[in-house]
Amino acid sequence: MLDIAFIRQNADLVRAAIRNKRFDLDLDELLSADKRRREVITLLDEKRARKNQVAALIPKASKEERPKLIEEGKEVKAAIEKLEPELAEITRVYDDFMLRVPSVPRPEVPVGAGEDDNVEIRKVGTPRAFDFEPKDHLDLMQSLGMVNFDGPRKFAGGRSYALTGLGALLEMAVTRLTADVLVQRGLTMVIPPVMVKERAMQGTGFFPLGREEAYAITADELFLVGTSEVALVSLHADDTLDEAQLPIRYAGLSPCFRREAGAYGKDTRGLYRVHQFTKVEQVVFCLPDEAVAEKEHYQLLDNAEAVLHALEIPYRVALACTGEIGLGQTRKHEVESWMPSRNAYSETHSCSTLGDFQSRRSNIRLRLANGTLVYPYTLNNTAIASPRILIPLLENHQNPDGSITLPKALVPYMNGRTKLERGGK
Image (tube, rainbow, N blue to C red):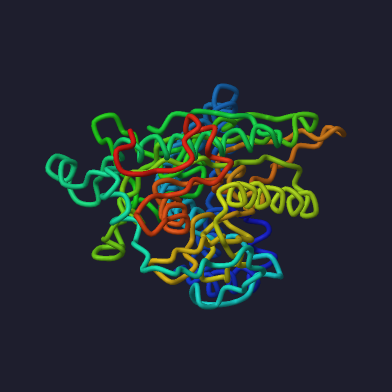
């Protein structure tokens, strides 16, 4: 959420952000609602003050003055009763607009409509040149007994799956490797709740615009998260942090859930786009300083790249354009792993800076050393997400006989196994 004072003073800048991020929002309607809200608040304050004055004057008034004051009191009360619902309605409209105003992208973010307009920063590693006909991850996993689709889809519906045998062990190994990398780099591991109240989804910016992507538990007014970012940020909702506590760096491990409401018929083969997945997410709270946030951003990005190095997966890093960054993001890098079956680099990680967007919405304050109260900045990064990461991991390390040679870093996490092959458990 942006500061309304900033919006008033930088209306053209915010309009450009709305346009370049490709959101549908009429800023003039927000500014009009803001103006009327302030007018009504002023009127109400005046009327309430006068009501108190009249109430105090009536007992002291003369017999002649009292009827006039009583009549004025009735008129003031009627005016208040008319203004209060108007304020409630205009505030509802104002709040709804404020929740939909996007953050302003950083100057280095390229203006663009979609992923084709992202700017490649670097490529790391070389895509493998196979001297045999490689299989895709689905064929590899089915031949090795690593996944079951038919059973789960009978009782859980489309895009459901079960990792089995070596598939289950491999996901556990990858997530544990990632957790160890992050803990060694100073992050605090958290296993947070995955069922949250609406306020947590709204506070982190996933509602109202992303509501259709979330699974709702209507009986309890809860929602399943699509990332542990929601819970990690919300750990400090309504808190006042001290400057000495910063930076706070969390790594959250959780199952995640996403309806993929806008992806009907897209990426239906295999495990690229599923409704349930496991993710290790990084979240940072830092000082509200762009230089500090930039340093944290690139450290988060480096953490994710360290995991890909350990998994020996070729990848590329791209700076996302305005049409590809979300409501609250001011800067985002996408990390795309090489997937032989797609003959392309495809997104497996993202790294985002959000400024004070989430802390304002979640009412997270920061007391600086000099006593000043401000809002901290937040950042997040996908350290690993499975089963999507299994696609490049398996496809890049396959052998002609359909077995998979494990990267050295994974061997200790697979009980010393160096290869995945038929008959493995």
